[in-house]
Amino acid sequence: MKFIYRVFWFVLVIMGAMTFLPASADEVINDAAALNGVKATKSVFLIDFTNPRKTAFYMDIIRGTHDGLVNQGVSPNMVLVFIGQTVKYLSTEPDELLAMEYEQELRSIAESAKALKQRGVRMEVCAVATKVFEVENAKVLPEMDVVGDGFISLIGWQTQGHKLVPIF
Image 1: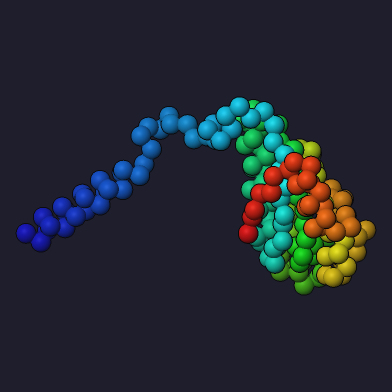
Image 2: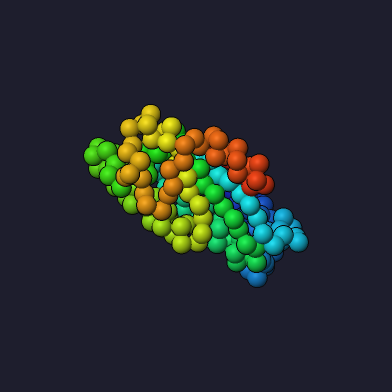
């Protein structure tokens, strides 16, 4: 009887799990509802992370977001604004300890910056933050532009119609 009881629960669990699977393997997952009638977008991302791993992860995600929009027939106009401690991960010559501990992540950030620049994405680095975190403006990744104040930049882009994409 115990065996039958276990089999019954096993089958029940499997059947329950199957309800979360797509109805067919051919089911298309896209953003058609959100992009209905949309031909172009204007977005601004405020990037303020305290971890290079998270910065690398989100830069890769943003690259995928850009490509996803293009693949769905939308022309993206994207701006990334980097503030705070994040600027430490955007240097061609990062701190030696940081470079040693996060070599792969820093490489990924630089690769994403190149790929995003090739796609026409504008990337701005806050000079207030570079001063506070002692990053030389001349050593910021060449794909990025140093701007006077990241908050002013963010305000300006939003005033021009760019929608803020919150990431945290």
